[in-house]
Length: 404
Image (cartoon, rainbow, N blue to C red; front, side):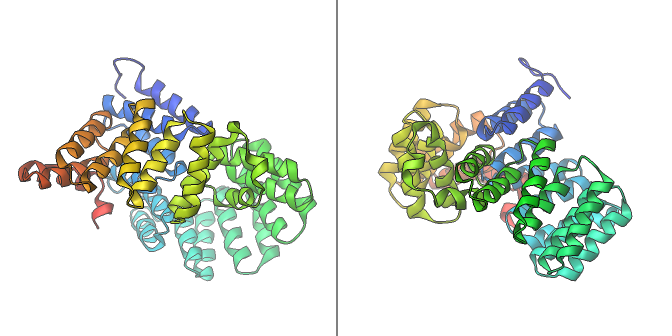
Protein backbone atom coordinates (compact mmCIF):
# COMPACT_ATOMS: atom_id res chain seq x y z
CA UNK A 1 0.00 0.00 0.00
CA UNK A 2 1.55 3.29 -1.12
CA UNK A 3 1.78 6.46 0.91
CA UNK A 4 -0.12 9.59 -0.16
CA UNK A 5 1.49 13.05 -0.06
CA UNK A 6 -0.95 14.01 2.69
CA UNK A 7 -2.83 11.38 4.68
CA UNK A 8 -1.76 7.80 4.01
CA UNK A 9 -3.89 5.57 1.78
CA UNK A 10 -4.76 3.50 4.85
CA UNK A 11 -5.88 6.61 6.74
CA UNK A 12 -8.01 7.77 3.82
CA UNK A 13 -9.68 4.37 3.53
CA UNK A 14 -10.36 4.19 7.25
CA UNK A 15 -11.88 7.67 7.08
CA UNK A 16 -13.95 6.61 4.04
CA UNK A 17 -15.38 3.61 5.86
CA UNK A 18 -16.21 5.77 8.87
CA UNK A 19 -18.03 8.26 6.60
CA UNK A 20 -19.99 5.43 4.98
CA UNK A 21 -21.03 4.03 8.36
CA UNK A 22 -22.32 7.50 9.24
CA UNK A 23 -24.37 7.66 6.04
CA UNK A 24 -22.11 10.18 4.24
CA UNK A 25 -21.76 8.13 1.08
CA UNK A 26 -20.67 10.86 -1.34
CA UNK A 27 -17.89 11.84 1.07
CA UNK A 28 -16.87 8.20 1.44
CA UNK A 29 -16.60 7.76 -2.34
CA UNK A 30 -14.54 10.95 -2.64
CA UNK A 31 -12.08 9.75 0.01
CA UNK A 32 -11.66 6.43 -1.82
CA UNK A 33 -10.98 8.38 -5.02
CA UNK A 34 -8.24 10.32 -3.23
CA UNK A 35 -6.71 7.03 -2.10
CA UNK A 36 -6.80 5.68 -5.66
CA UNK A 37 -4.93 8.73 -6.95
CA UNK A 38 -2.04 7.64 -4.74
CA UNK A 39 -2.37 3.92 -5.45
CA UNK A 40 -4.53 3.02 -8.49
CA UNK A 41 -4.14 -0.69 -7.72
CA UNK A 42 -5.45 -0.55 -4.14
CA UNK A 43 -8.17 -3.21 -4.11
CA UNK A 44 -9.72 -2.13 -0.82
CA UNK A 45 -10.33 1.35 -2.28
CA UNK A 46 -12.31 -0.07 -5.20
CA UNK A 47 -14.27 -2.35 -2.87
CA UNK A 48 -15.06 0.46 -0.39
CA UNK A 49 -15.97 2.94 -3.12
CA UNK A 50 -18.25 0.38 -4.74
CA UNK A 51 -20.08 -0.02 -1.43
CA UNK A 52 -20.38 3.77 -1.03
CA UNK A 53 -21.76 4.07 -4.56
CA UNK A 54 -24.21 1.26 -3.85
CA UNK A 55 -25.50 3.01 -0.73
CA UNK A 56 -25.85 6.24 -2.74
CA UNK A 57 -27.90 4.38 -5.35
CA UNK A 58 -25.21 4.65 -8.06
CA UNK A 59 -25.16 0.98 -8.94
CA UNK A 60 -23.61 1.58 -12.38
CA UNK A 61 -20.55 3.21 -10.79
CA UNK A 62 -20.41 0.48 -8.15
CA UNK A 63 -20.33 -2.18 -10.85
CA UNK A 64 -17.55 -0.32 -12.69
CA UNK A 65 -15.41 -0.47 -9.55
CA UNK A 66 -16.20 -4.14 -9.08
CA UNK A 67 -15.22 -4.80 -12.70
CA UNK A 68 -11.88 -3.16 -11.93
CA UNK A 69 -11.51 -5.32 -8.81
CA UNK A 70 -11.96 -8.46 -10.94
CA UNK A 71 -9.42 -7.12 -13.43
CA UNK A 72 -6.86 -6.62 -10.64
CA UNK A 73 -7.41 -10.13 -9.27
CA UNK A 74 -8.39 -12.32 -12.27
CA UNK A 75 -10.06 -15.57 -11.28
CA UNK A 76 -10.25 -14.59 -7.62
CA UNK A 77 -13.50 -16.06 -6.26
CA UNK A 78 -13.96 -13.22 -3.75
CA UNK A 79 -13.70 -10.56 -6.48
CA UNK A 80 -16.03 -12.50 -8.78
CA UNK A 81 -18.52 -12.97 -5.97
CA UNK A 82 -18.37 -9.26 -5.08
CA UNK A 83 -19.04 -8.35 -8.72
CA UNK A 84 -21.86 -10.85 -8.80
CA UNK A 85 -23.40 -9.15 -5.79
CA UNK A 86 -23.10 -5.85 -7.66
CA UNK A 87 -24.96 -7.32 -10.61
CA UNK A 88 -27.59 -8.73 -8.26
CA UNK A 89 -28.21 -5.24 -6.88
CA UNK A 90 -28.84 -4.16 -10.49
CA UNK A 91 -31.34 -7.05 -10.73
CA UNK A 92 -29.11 -8.81 -13.27
CA UNK A 93 -29.68 -12.18 -11.63
CA UNK A 94 -28.49 -14.21 -14.61
CA UNK A 95 -25.27 -12.19 -14.87
CA UNK A 96 -24.72 -12.52 -11.13
CA UNK A 97 -25.32 -16.26 -11.33
CA UNK A 98 -22.75 -16.49 -14.12
CA UNK A 99 -20.13 -14.83 -11.87
CA UNK A 100 -21.01 -17.21 -9.04
CA UNK A 101 -20.61 -20.21 -11.33
CA UNK A 102 -17.25 -18.91 -12.61
CA UNK A 103 -16.05 -18.49 -9.03
CA UNK A 104 -17.16 -22.04 -8.23
CA UNK A 105 -15.35 -23.48 -11.23
CA UNK A 106 -12.12 -22.11 -9.81
CA UNK A 107 -12.94 -22.79 -6.16
CA UNK A 108 -15.75 -25.37 -5.77
CA UNK A 109 -15.63 -25.00 -1.99
CA UNK A 110 -16.33 -21.24 -1.96
CA UNK A 111 -19.21 -20.87 0.49
CA UNK A 112 -19.78 -17.21 -0.47
CA UNK A 113 -20.09 -18.13 -4.16
CA UNK A 114 -22.61 -20.86 -3.30
CA UNK A 115 -24.70 -18.38 -1.31
CA UNK A 116 -24.62 -15.89 -4.20
CA UNK A 117 -25.78 -18.69 -6.48
CA UNK A 118 -28.57 -19.48 -4.02
CA UNK A 119 -29.69 -15.84 -3.81
CA UNK A 120 -29.86 -15.63 -7.61
CA UNK A 121 -31.80 -18.86 -7.96
CA UNK A 122 -34.25 -17.63 -5.31
CA UNK A 123 -34.72 -14.34 -7.14
CA UNK A 124 -35.38 -16.30 -10.33
CA UNK A 125 -38.07 -18.30 -8.53
CA UNK A 126 -36.13 -21.57 -8.52
CA UNK A 127 -36.48 -22.35 -4.82
CA UNK A 128 -35.26 -25.97 -4.94
CA UNK A 129 -32.01 -24.85 -6.57
CA UNK A 130 -31.74 -21.98 -4.09
CA UNK A 131 -32.05 -24.35 -1.13
CA UNK A 132 -29.55 -26.75 -2.74
CA UNK A 133 -27.03 -23.93 -3.28
CA UNK A 134 -27.25 -22.74 0.31
CA UNK A 135 -26.95 -26.33 1.50
CA UNK A 136 -23.75 -26.68 -0.54
CA UNK A 137 -22.45 -23.51 1.14
CA UNK A 138 -22.88 -24.85 4.67
CA UNK A 139 -21.55 -28.24 3.60
CA UNK A 140 -18.40 -26.51 2.32
CA UNK A 141 -18.13 -24.51 5.56
CA UNK A 142 -20.37 -25.71 8.42
CA UNK A 143 -19.43 -22.61 10.41
CA UNK A 144 -20.60 -20.23 7.66
CA UNK A 145 -23.67 -18.80 9.36
CA UNK A 146 -24.73 -16.69 6.37
CA UNK A 147 -25.32 -19.90 4.41
CA UNK A 148 -28.00 -20.94 6.89
CA UNK A 149 -29.57 -17.47 6.71
CA UNK A 150 -29.70 -17.59 2.91
CA UNK A 151 -31.27 -21.05 3.07
CA UNK A 152 -33.81 -19.70 5.56
CA UNK A 153 -34.74 -16.95 3.08
CA UNK A 154 -35.34 -19.51 0.35
CA UNK A 155 -37.37 -21.75 2.64
CA UNK A 156 -39.52 -18.85 3.84
CA UNK A 157 -40.24 -17.77 0.29
CA UNK A 158 -41.14 -21.36 -0.67
CA UNK A 159 -43.62 -21.50 2.24
CA UNK A 160 -41.62 -23.53 4.77
CA UNK A 161 -41.90 -21.18 7.76
CA UNK A 162 -40.74 -23.63 10.43
CA UNK A 163 -37.82 -24.80 8.30
CA UNK A 164 -36.79 -21.18 7.82
CA UNK A 165 -36.91 -20.49 11.56
CA UNK A 166 -34.89 -23.65 12.22
CA UNK A 167 -32.19 -22.46 9.80
CA UNK A 168 -31.90 -19.10 11.57
CA UNK A 169 -31.29 -21.02 14.80
CA UNK A 170 -28.58 -23.05 13.04
CA UNK A 171 -27.03 -19.76 11.89
CA UNK A 172 -26.99 -18.51 15.48
CA UNK A 173 -25.46 -21.79 16.64
CA UNK A 174 -22.73 -21.48 14.01
CA UNK A 175 -22.02 -17.88 15.03
CA UNK A 176 -23.56 -16.50 18.19
CA UNK A 177 -22.78 -12.93 17.10
CA UNK A 178 -24.36 -13.18 13.62
CA UNK A 179 -26.78 -10.24 13.60
CA UNK A 180 -28.44 -11.44 10.40
CA UNK A 181 -29.58 -14.66 12.06
CA UNK A 182 -31.63 -12.50 14.45
CA UNK A 183 -32.59 -9.98 11.76
CA UNK A 184 -34.01 -12.56 9.37
CA UNK A 185 -35.69 -14.44 12.20
CA UNK A 186 -37.32 -11.14 13.12
CA UNK A 187 -38.52 -10.63 9.54
CA UNK A 188 -39.89 -14.18 9.31
CA UNK A 189 -41.73 -13.74 12.60
CA UNK A 190 -43.07 -10.34 11.48
CA UNK A 191 -44.47 -11.90 8.33
CA UNK A 192 -46.13 -14.53 10.52
CA UNK A 193 -47.74 -11.83 12.68
CA UNK A 194 -45.70 -12.74 15.77
CA UNK A 195 -44.75 -9.14 16.49
CA UNK A 196 -43.54 -9.39 20.09
CA UNK A 197 -41.09 -12.15 19.17
CA UNK A 198 -40.05 -10.22 16.05
CA UNK A 199 -39.28 -7.08 18.05
CA UNK A 200 -37.12 -9.05 20.49
CA UNK A 201 -35.08 -10.53 17.62
CA UNK A 202 -34.62 -7.17 15.87
CA UNK A 203 -33.54 -5.51 19.12
CA UNK A 204 -30.89 -8.22 19.44
CA UNK A 205 -29.82 -7.78 15.81
CA UNK A 206 -29.29 -4.07 16.41
CA UNK A 207 -27.32 -4.71 19.58
CA UNK A 208 -24.94 -6.75 17.44
CA UNK A 209 -24.94 -4.39 14.42
CA UNK A 210 -26.26 -0.93 15.37
CA UNK A 211 -25.71 0.71 11.96
CA UNK A 212 -27.62 -1.79 9.79
CA UNK A 213 -30.30 0.26 8.02
CA UNK A 214 -32.35 -2.79 7.11
CA UNK A 215 -32.64 -3.93 10.74
CA UNK A 216 -33.75 -0.42 11.73
CA UNK A 217 -36.35 -0.32 8.96
CA UNK A 218 -37.74 -3.70 9.96
CA UNK A 219 -37.87 -2.72 13.62
CA UNK A 220 -39.61 0.50 12.66
CA UNK A 221 -42.22 -1.47 10.76
CA UNK A 222 -42.75 -3.86 13.68
CA UNK A 223 -43.15 -0.91 16.08
CA UNK A 224 -45.64 0.73 13.71
CA UNK A 225 -47.65 -2.48 13.43
CA UNK A 226 -47.68 -2.71 17.23
CA UNK A 227 -49.05 0.86 17.43
CA UNK A 228 -45.85 2.68 18.47
CA UNK A 229 -45.95 5.04 15.47
CA UNK A 230 -43.55 7.73 16.72
CA UNK A 231 -40.91 5.17 17.71
CA UNK A 232 -41.29 3.48 14.35
CA UNK A 233 -40.79 6.78 12.52
CA UNK A 234 -37.59 7.43 14.46
CA UNK A 235 -36.19 4.05 13.38
CA UNK A 236 -37.12 4.68 9.75
CA UNK A 237 -35.53 8.12 9.68
CA UNK A 238 -32.29 6.65 11.00
CA UNK A 239 -32.50 3.82 8.44
CA UNK A 240 -32.81 6.33 5.60
CA UNK A 241 -29.87 8.34 6.93
CA UNK A 242 -27.71 5.23 6.85
CA UNK A 243 -28.90 3.94 3.47
CA UNK A 244 -30.75 6.44 1.32
CA UNK A 245 -32.08 3.85 -1.12
CA UNK A 246 -33.66 1.43 1.30
CA UNK A 247 -37.02 1.07 -0.39
CA UNK A 248 -38.97 -0.39 2.55
CA UNK A 249 -38.05 2.66 4.65
CA UNK A 250 -39.47 4.98 2.00
CA UNK A 251 -42.67 2.96 1.87
CA UNK A 252 -43.14 3.87 5.52
CA UNK A 253 -42.11 7.51 5.18
CA UNK A 254 -44.35 7.96 2.16
CA UNK A 255 -47.36 7.07 4.29
CA UNK A 256 -46.63 9.88 6.74
CA UNK A 257 -48.38 13.23 6.46
CA UNK A 258 -46.28 16.18 5.24
CA UNK A 259 -46.53 17.97 8.58
CA UNK A 260 -44.41 15.27 10.23
CA UNK A 261 -41.51 15.93 7.89
CA UNK A 262 -41.85 19.72 7.55
CA UNK A 263 -38.61 20.42 9.34
CA UNK A 264 -35.45 21.79 7.73
CA UNK A 265 -33.42 19.29 9.76
CA UNK A 266 -35.08 16.55 7.74
CA UNK A 267 -34.55 18.07 4.30
CA UNK A 268 -32.21 15.20 3.52
CA UNK A 269 -35.14 12.79 3.88
CA UNK A 270 -36.86 14.47 0.95
CA UNK A 271 -33.60 14.55 -0.95
CA UNK A 272 -32.82 10.87 -0.49
CA UNK A 273 -36.41 9.85 -1.19
CA UNK A 274 -36.33 11.98 -4.32
CA UNK A 275 -33.22 10.10 -5.40
CA UNK A 276 -34.97 6.78 -4.77
CA UNK A 277 -38.00 7.90 -6.81
CA UNK A 278 -35.62 9.00 -9.59
CA UNK A 279 -33.95 5.61 -9.63
CA UNK A 280 -37.34 3.93 -10.01
CA UNK A 281 -38.33 6.33 -12.84
CA UNK A 282 -41.06 7.94 -10.71
CA UNK A 283 -40.14 11.37 -12.03
CA UNK A 284 -43.10 13.42 -10.76
CA UNK A 285 -42.62 12.11 -7.21
CA UNK A 286 -38.85 12.72 -7.47
CA UNK A 287 -39.40 16.31 -8.59
CA UNK A 288 -41.78 17.02 -5.70
CA UNK A 289 -39.34 15.64 -3.12
CA UNK A 290 -36.26 17.37 -4.52
CA UNK A 291 -38.13 20.68 -4.83
CA UNK A 292 -38.98 20.36 -1.15
CA UNK A 293 -35.39 19.45 -0.22
CA UNK A 294 -33.78 22.50 -1.81
CA UNK A 295 -36.47 24.77 -0.36
CA UNK A 296 -35.84 23.45 3.15
CA UNK A 297 -32.03 23.38 2.81
CA UNK A 298 -30.81 25.82 0.13
CA UNK A 299 -27.16 25.03 0.95
CA UNK A 300 -27.56 21.29 0.31
CA UNK A 301 -25.27 20.92 -2.71
CA UNK A 302 -26.14 17.32 -3.54
CA UNK A 303 -29.90 18.02 -3.54
CA UNK A 304 -29.36 20.79 -6.11
CA UNK A 305 -27.20 18.43 -8.17
CA UNK A 306 -29.74 15.63 -8.04
CA UNK A 307 -32.54 17.99 -9.03
CA UNK A 308 -30.36 19.23 -11.88
CA UNK A 309 -29.85 15.67 -13.12
CA UNK A 310 -33.60 15.07 -12.88
CA UNK A 311 -34.30 18.20 -14.90
CA UNK A 312 -31.79 17.01 -17.50
CA UNK A 313 -33.64 13.69 -17.64
CA UNK A 314 -36.92 15.56 -18.21
CA UNK A 315 -35.45 17.76 -20.96
CA UNK A 316 -35.31 21.03 -19.00
CA UNK A 317 -31.78 21.98 -20.04
CA UNK A 318 -31.92 25.55 -18.76
CA UNK A 319 -33.19 24.45 -15.34
CA UNK A 320 -30.65 21.63 -15.19
CA UNK A 321 -27.76 23.96 -15.96
CA UNK A 322 -28.91 26.43 -13.28
CA UNK A 323 -29.24 23.75 -10.59
CA UNK A 324 -25.93 22.07 -11.41
CA UNK A 325 -24.07 25.37 -11.54
CA UNK A 326 -25.45 26.22 -8.10
CA UNK A 327 -24.42 22.81 -6.75
CA UNK A 328 -20.88 23.30 -8.02
CA UNK A 329 -20.69 26.78 -6.55
CA UNK A 330 -21.50 25.22 -3.17
CA UNK A 331 -19.14 22.26 -3.65
CA UNK A 332 -16.72 22.62 -6.62
CA UNK A 333 -15.20 19.14 -6.15
CA UNK A 334 -18.44 17.22 -6.81
CA UNK A 335 -17.20 15.28 -9.85
CA UNK A 336 -20.54 13.66 -10.66
CA UNK A 337 -22.25 17.06 -10.83
CA UNK A 338 -19.63 18.14 -13.38
CA UNK A 339 -20.46 15.06 -15.44
CA UNK A 340 -24.16 15.94 -15.36
CA UNK A 341 -23.40 19.55 -16.30
CA UNK A 342 -21.27 18.26 -19.17
CA UNK A 343 -24.16 16.10 -20.34
CA UNK A 344 -26.43 19.14 -20.13
CA UNK A 345 -24.03 21.23 -22.25
CA UNK A 346 -23.70 18.40 -24.76
CA UNK A 347 -27.49 18.04 -25.04
CA UNK A 348 -27.65 21.81 -25.72
CA UNK A 349 -25.19 21.42 -28.62
CA UNK A 350 -22.29 23.07 -26.76
CA UNK A 351 -19.63 20.41 -27.27
CA UNK A 352 -16.65 22.60 -26.32
CA UNK A 353 -18.31 23.68 -23.04
CA UNK A 354 -19.27 20.07 -22.37
CA UNK A 355 -15.69 18.90 -22.90
CA UNK A 356 -14.50 21.47 -20.36
CA UNK A 357 -16.88 20.06 -17.74
CA UNK A 358 -15.99 16.43 -18.44
CA UNK A 359 -12.29 17.26 -18.23
CA UNK A 360 -12.88 19.02 -14.90
CA UNK A 361 -14.69 15.92 -13.61
CA UNK A 362 -11.84 13.67 -14.74
CA UNK A 363 -9.28 15.93 -13.06
CA UNK A 364 -11.11 15.20 -9.81
CA UNK A 365 -11.67 11.48 -10.53
CA UNK A 366 -9.58 10.14 -13.45
CA UNK A 367 -11.40 6.81 -13.65
CA UNK A 368 -14.93 8.25 -13.65
CA UNK A 369 -16.42 6.11 -16.39
CA UNK A 370 -19.28 8.41 -17.40
CA UNK A 371 -16.83 11.31 -17.47
CA UNK A 372 -14.73 9.37 -20.01
CA UNK A 373 -17.80 8.47 -22.05
CA UNK A 374 -18.93 12.11 -22.06
CA UNK A 375 -15.44 13.25 -23.02
CA UNK A 376 -15.45 10.80 -25.93
CA UNK A 377 -18.86 12.04 -27.14
CA UNK A 378 -17.76 15.69 -26.92
CA UNK A 379 -14.53 15.01 -28.81
CA UNK A 380 -16.47 13.16 -31.47
CA UNK A 381 -18.74 16.21 -31.95
CA UNK A 382 -15.61 18.34 -32.24
CA UNK A 383 -14.22 15.86 -34.83
CA UNK A 384 -11.19 15.01 -32.69
CA UNK A 385 -11.55 11.32 -33.36
CA UNK A 386 -8.21 9.88 -32.13
CA UNK A 387 -8.75 11.47 -28.70
CA UNK A 388 -12.37 10.28 -28.68
CA UNK A 389 -11.28 6.71 -29.43
CA UNK A 390 -8.69 6.84 -26.63
CA UNK A 391 -11.28 8.05 -24.09
CA UNK A 392 -13.84 5.39 -24.99
CA UNK A 393 -11.15 2.69 -24.96
CA UNK A 394 -10.22 3.65 -21.40
CA UNK A 395 -13.88 3.65 -20.35
CA UNK A 396 -14.35 0.20 -21.88
CA UNK A 397 -11.25 -1.12 -20.09
CA UNK A 398 -12.47 0.25 -16.73
CA UNK A 399 -16.06 -0.96 -17.03
CA UNK A 400 -16.49 -3.70 -19.65
CA UNK A 401 -19.88 -4.55 -18.16
CA UNK A 402 -21.33 -1.25 -19.41
CA UNK A 403 -20.45 -2.15 -23.00
CA UNK A 404 -21.57 -5.81 -22.95
